[in-house]
Image (cartoon, rainbow, N blue to C red; front, side, top):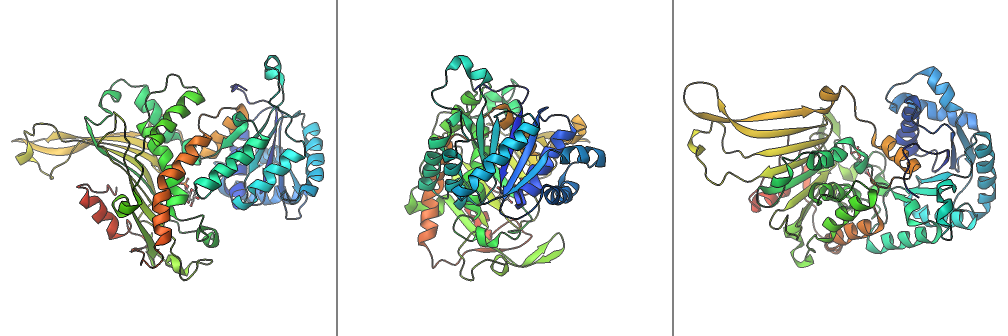
Length: 509
Ligand code: BG6
């Protein structure tokens, strides 16, 4: 079904309604959308999870989260919004519970006049996905079918599903999940979320590249030396130790396979023919398909890992990873990973992309650094006040969303002294606005049927294929002592040597 500008009436069913993601992101984002008048006129939410609660208990619980996490709170707005929230205690992995779920869905849909449109959100632990998707299918909740007559498409009700990450833990499990989804939903109704794609600056990257004539001609191997994509966090595993340590976590799976490869694909993609979802996703998928397969025999030339030890983060003493609750004492899980990616196509041949992510790093920072080559003929090298520096574009995804261009300028005064100068675009200052929460953008897009910022099935499977040789090598190397870094630093020194061996250096700013 083609996307619409206005979201149509909709019942949102959240499986995992009392979980952390629902409380920190989903309900506060819905409340923000409600305050801005962006939700459909007829809209309601049915939260489903196993905890016994009434509608009012649930609203009370969500009120706490909204107060804490929404952009701004207004009691009157909350009172109106709270009426849209409903709760049904059930175990969605149990098929027998679905007659109750389906009855409650019909009731709230009738009360709020949302018709048969339903958006399911899987905000559950990934081991439950299969069962819940199959139960949705076998309970007859998906009526949009392959046999629809196209003439009726615009008025047909729709049922869509948003699937949270992790989407599998390797190539095979991701392909399996795609098959399970395909048995119940049309591909155009499956929204595989990557909240990094919903971040304003990641979308702005496309505008930066394709709405300006001056950058695209230099966005290639002729001018660019390398690209760095960093996602550094100051938080640790935030009470998710047992999940993170279970074999589905670790920085390579949790951040690089998912978020960072996607951001890289947006940096590296060819201009799409149109801004239609399919055209954009075709181009990002082509980038991932062009990534040179990593030879497991040379894995150490492509990747580095590390684990944080105790240290100081923002002047607070924090424990090391092995002391976090739920983490095994013999854990080999990496909390830091860096990966070199080579894209074998005409544009990027010989331009490495370095992706890195770590927990408990020196500061929270997600950024893309596009490092340009030195000018072909250097006239001023002996006049530099601050050492050699080349042009650089830094795209700050978060915090301090913005874009910065560094270039060389003459330092005022007698004589020819050269120094680096910065040209800054600061999102908040320029637009006097805070970027929206990524989840608000993505929830609204799913209601509108716009898949542009969601991953397609081939993309996810290909991203797993890219990292799999490293994951396999690390999994086989159970005796290796993981390089450590003190919490509150920029990662293991091995990661600095890794870059130095390639004649480059991380930008930690
Ligand atoms: C999630 C990861 O996908 O992204 C978390 O599972 C991580 O481990 C989080 O902390 C980071 O998101 P953001 O938006 O804070 O950069």
